Length: 447
Length: 79
Image 1: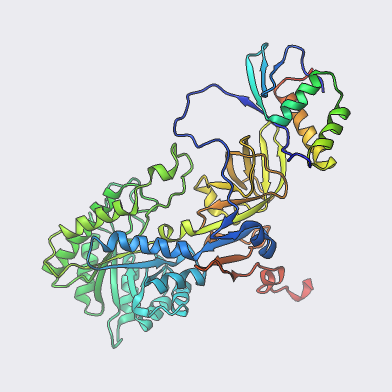
Image 2 (image 1 turned 45 degrees about the horizontal axis):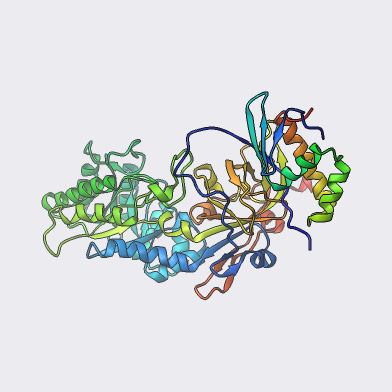
C-alpha cells in the first residue's frame, strides 16, 4: 500500500504581527451538500455545477419572517427577482408566501408566469416603458414611481382607465449612508417627494398606496434603516394629515448583507455582519414609535434578495491546472471564472476542498479559465495542495450569480436543486452552442 | 538539484538561509527530498524512491519536481 501523495512545496516564513482572528490552518473539506456527495453530483451533472439548497432557501425565508414578524404585526416579504431568476428558486419563495419585486417588463411577466397575482407584484426600477406600465395596470401590479417623467407617463397611461393604477412613491433620503443613493426615486429632503405625492393625489387618476425606499446594498449599519423607517413613517403620517390619504404599506427595500466577506474587509463577514434580528429591531422599533394610531400601522414590506438566497447557493468546480507565476506565487486555474461567479468582483468568496488534505497550505492566486486578465477569483488564498482534477466548492453564491452570469468564452452550466428530502433536480440545463446561436441570423452573402 | 552549502535544514522541514536570514517551511515530501539531496542522492534516485513509496504517476511527479526546483530557485536556495 503506497502512501498518499502531496506535491512537494516550500513556503517562505514571514515574520509579522500575529492575527488572533486568523482561521485554523488547513481548510475543512466539504464532501457533501445537503447530504448528496459532491463527487456524485459532478459525475452526474458535470463541472462546474451550481447547486441550490431548497432547505436553506426556506430556512432563510423563515428566519427573515421570524425576525420581523415577531416584532411587528404586519410583515410581507417581496422576493427580489433580479437576485436569482431561476423559477424553482422564485417558486420556492412564493410557496413560502413571498410577493414579487420586479424591475422590468420581462421580470413582471416572469412573476406572472410563476403564478404571482398582479396585486402581489411590486414594480420597481428606473426604466419602465409605456408598454410595461400598460401591462402593470392591466394586471393591477403596484407601480413604484421612480421619477417625474415616469409619473407623467403613468398619468397619461392612466387617463381613461376604469380603474386607477395603484402606485407607491420611491423616495431617496439621507439615512446617514455615504454615498447616499439618490439616483432612484424622489428626494425627501429637498421636497421633491412631497411635491410628487401631492401631484399623485391631486391627479385623481392614481391610487397612492405605499411609500418605498431602498437605502443601498450590503448596508452594515442597522441604525441607517431605523433612520429611513422613521423618515418614511413621518412622510406617511403627513400624507394622512395633509393629503387625507392613507398609506397602506411602507417598503423599506432590501440591501441586507449576507455573510460573504467584502473585498478589502479586515475581518470575515461572519464576525462583522449584524444579524437580521438587529435590522428587524431597528426598523420595527422606528415604525412602532413613529406615531401611528393603534390598529393603523401600515404593512411593512421588505424586498429581500441577497439575504434570502445567497447562503443557499454553492458552486462546484474543478482544478484544471496549477502553475507558478513569475514572482514565485502559486496560481491555480479552475473551470469557472468571473463569467459564472460575477460576485467575485465584490467578495472574497470562501472556498473549500472536497477531500482531506494535510494541513500544508500555499498562498495561491485563483484564476478562472477565461483568456482575459480580469478573470481572477481570489488574489491570494491559503489553499491545500490541490492537484488537477480536484474539486472545490465555493459557498454562498446564490445571489446575483445566476442572473448576472455571462455566455462569455464558456457556456453556462447545469444548475441543480437539492430538495428537502435530498433528492436532486436539474432546474436549468447546461447551455449548448445551438442554444447560444439560435437567435443569430447570418446575412445571405456570408453563407 | 544542488542546495547551497550553507543552507540548514531540519527533519521537520524548517529551512534556514544564514546568508540572508530567510527561513522557510517545507512540507513533509519536500523536506524528505531536501534531506536526500543533502545526503548526496541524485535526482533520478530520489524520484525512483518516491515513485516506489508514494501513490503518484511519473508524469505528475516530473511536473511537481520541476515546480519544486522553480521554488528553490525563486527562494535562492540552489547553487
